[in-house]
Length: 213
Image 1 (cartoon, rainbow, N blue to C red):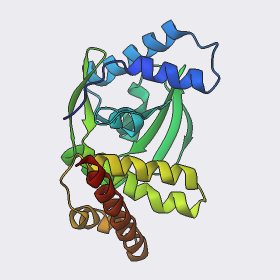
Image 2: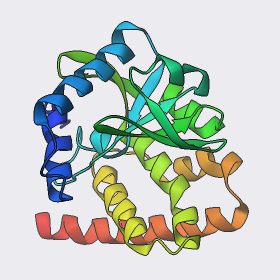
Image 3: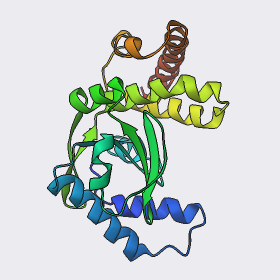
Image 4: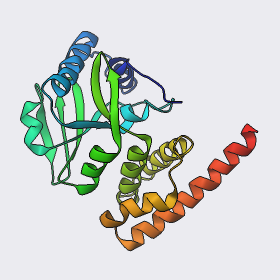
């Protein structure tokens, strides 16, 4: 059963406090969050919410300090108060102070596919935003895993695998279907490694189900 979370600003606030930003102005955070969400909805900016906030629509226990979006580069100037800090072809980071924004650009064909085929509208702070589905989030996290491992970001990779495991409990998608969708976007060696990751996650999922009986 999908979970509905309208307390987006509270999630961000709690994560920032945990990271030591205790001097953050909570009212400013809520105000900027509303401004951003209203711009996405009322200015009809094509977008998809992904990352930790999207994940929290389906599973509990995950915290996040960022808003993650799939967006077209040409729509960046339409985000109210947004300042771009870093950018490459597929990714960007910036902020709508005090909000931190991580971006995935539609120049990447997988991100476009997730936006078009694996997203639906959800409610956040009274606004209706397009949010990635469980399958969409799984695809994005699988796509990121090879790069994380090559960069030695083992803790983050472990977190992503745990996220995927939780989502696999909710979504009946098959490993074959996931790998087929990723095939145009990753090398053969990466796909083979992801196949092994998925096999391991399915085994762990089987252990969970045995204890749930």
